[in-house]
Length: 493
Image (tube, rainbow, N blue to C red; front, side, top):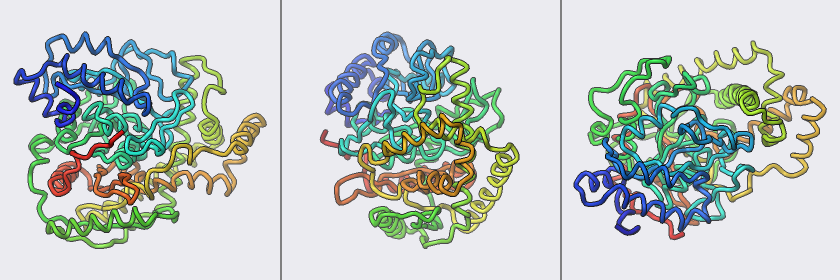
């Protein structure tokens, strides 16, 4: 099999070829590694190759719905026993995982052949993938632009044809943002549906989840079946599975859906004309397919939600840095300046302030639930504008020097109480103000590649469903995929 034939199939298609004996896992792996060697030097999507481990595995008897299919995992939270999980940080470069994470175990049980780990911003804290530890990751559609973050390496690898689907995770948009940047399907499952063990009961108070980025809806649905195949007996929730597999539910007609859409940024920042057009064009397509679509009022205090999200986010960064330092003995200077500022600011936060922010999550969740009493789905831009250029969101040098001075003088706590800090932190969400809602409320959401800019860059749109709405999202995505046929699109590189 050569690359051009390999690229014609999604992951389930490749698994079917293996099951029929038309191609071997070793042959598929050779093509995937060959493609990686051809393009990764320009993309920097894979930061830890696992070729020899993969070759040994590909030569064994493999079983499962994805038996023999090459696969990549994200180098953040998706531990592979005996290898380092770098997390985009210099502080973790030598820390070896003691065991597989549960999602990795399930991918292995499904027969996948893991041959590398993909890049991520440090600790997954940015919407671009440009860590100091491993360097910039680039978008296959235009190498001057970002593939998004934090699952940017996975998205770049899938868009470039190295693999048809790859591991990802999402704590504030980190599956949907890179999917939108790279013309791919990115589903964030609802809270508690996927396991987070064995090291964690839940990530980010339940706001974060693992998942995948793929070219086809059916791969995403089948992967959701793999990842929810059994309960996590040590986890905090018992997840209620639907009456059929997600793969089967994705094939069903979605019925006539009521869709409310918004195009204004929930935090009052600018939204580009391209992002607005992406939603308006999607609304037109939905109406053509027989759905009821109208512009709507969300009824959620977006600015307060963003502040409450960032309260949790900064506290998590602080706790994570402390944990890493305890595990590795890393010094403060081994972490990037902006993450150290977030961590230092969080350490000055009174515990009642954190609890109050967490309690308000309930208010935001119930406001979104009220929206879903009227509408089956919320439609928004995934991004506020096209994928930004590499380095566009870098802090200016003077600001980094100012941050170092603030940290040296121990003034981060005072700075965090100023309006300047609040406004600056909120502005960090300006390119991606639409995605945190689904994380904080625990609702499922999906980004679909339904728009291309005048510069031929992908720009996805987001659908957010109510509690347990994964089947609806997948069914509608299948219907839209049949209309748009995005899986055949391929960057020239």
